[in-house]
Image (spheres, rainbow, N blue to C red):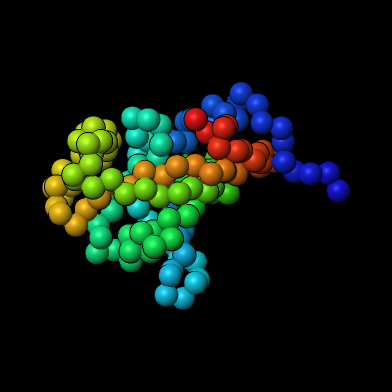
Length: 159
């Protein structure tokens, strides 16, 4: 049987860039440290100024506590369009390592401004002490660009 994975090309790289630039939400998969089982949550997500996926997460959330213990996670990025089969729309499954950026970190103000540019309603709570920005450093990814368009990307393909 022929592999369904295509060689990575410029069109696929452009699709990845577009998915990341347009992102406003993602499904976050993480390991529950209490059970060892995977869990999924929806998070707000933007492409940060350094092109790393960036979120704002409360320490009160289950996924925040889990990521602080086990920072390896994955993100499913890309929303189905208004028409057609949702499985034909492009999406990126990104394997990543989560890093928390607290208010005291020197890069917090710059990242917060970038986050608020794309998620302005977060202005209401971005300054709360229990919220931290979270950067996701890519470890690898799978791009499903639609029917018959599958690609595997390494970290070097995502910068």
